[in-house]
Each structure stands twice: as C-alpha cells, then as structure tokens.
Image 1 (cartoon, one colour):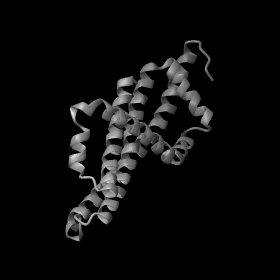
Image 2 (spheres, one colour; image 1 turned 90 degrees about the vertical axis):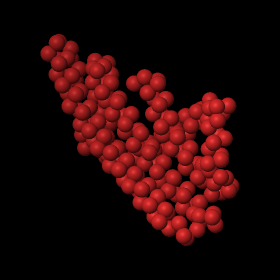
Image 3 (cartoon, helix red, strand yellow; image 1 turned 45 degrees about the vertical axis):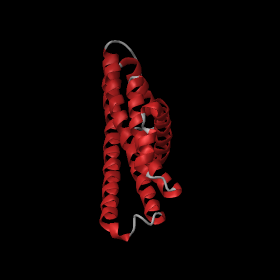
Image 4 (cartoon, one colour; image 1 turned 135 degrees about the vertical axis):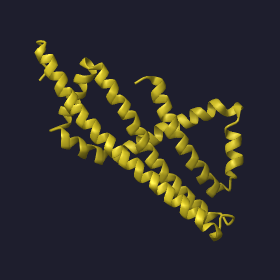
Length: 194
C-alpha cells in the first residue's frame, strides 16, 4: 500500500470526524455550522484543515481499532490456532508473495474505512442528539427530520459494521488460504518454511 493510499484513507475517516465535531461545536458553542464550515474550508486554510482532518483520521482510526479489537481477535482465532500462526502467515506473504500481500492490503484499507465510518456515524448521531437538546431553534416541530437522520445514521452504522465483519472474516480466510498455498509452492521449489 502506498503512502498516498494511506493518506487518502485517513482523510476519508478524518472528514467524518470533522463533520461530527462541527455539529458538536454547534451544540456546545452555538456555532452556525454552514458559516463555520465555509470559513474553515477557505483556500487560505486548506493546508491547515487538511492537516487537522488527517490527524482526526489517525485518532478515529486508532479508537476504532481499539473498539473493534475484541471482535477482530475472535474472528482471527476462528481461522488461526494462535496469534503467532497468523503473524507467521502474514510474514510469509510479505516476504514471498508481494502480489498476494497487495491484494490483502487493499481489503485492509476498505476494512479500516468501514470501521472508522461506523464510529463516525455513531459520534455524529450523538452530536446531533446533543444539538437537538441544546438548540431551541431545532425544536419538536422538526421531528420528521430528526427521525430520518436517526434512522439514516443507524442504518449507515449497521451497514458499516456488517461490511467490516465480512471484510475481516474474508481477510483471515484469504490469509490462511493464500499463505498455505504460498508455503506449498516454496516447499516444491526446495524452500522450507514451516
């Protein structure tokens, strides 16, 4: 995976975090979200904002990794007898199966975006609830918009978690299958990697 791909991935996650932080700022400090967003995305602030969004992407990615870790280990343990066996399979692919490894890395990128987006959706929903409670101008007459936003963000969260789960299970199965195949090929050529 190239640095550009990682940068883009973290920007995607970071923009999601930026969105819910804007809404949270509106709830706590009374910001007008469109006005603040317009100022922060001006050409003069483009580089500092991209830097901030990138850092937010890193933070949310790490938090999401921590939050999903227990499930991740459960899925890994279903495919591999130990953590060391999993890392040995990955090492084998890194050293001897560059194309196979790149294919797995593409899946890891999608996995991280789904994981980060699930966390960002929940944070945005919480931020919206805080906004709805603290702002009188978003009163009870807007119940349909509130219900629609809630349903939409819950659906996005569920879909992101479901996609993450499918991707992570697929990654472990692929890692196991491809490393076994690679190990068999190396043995046929006279290399021993057990």
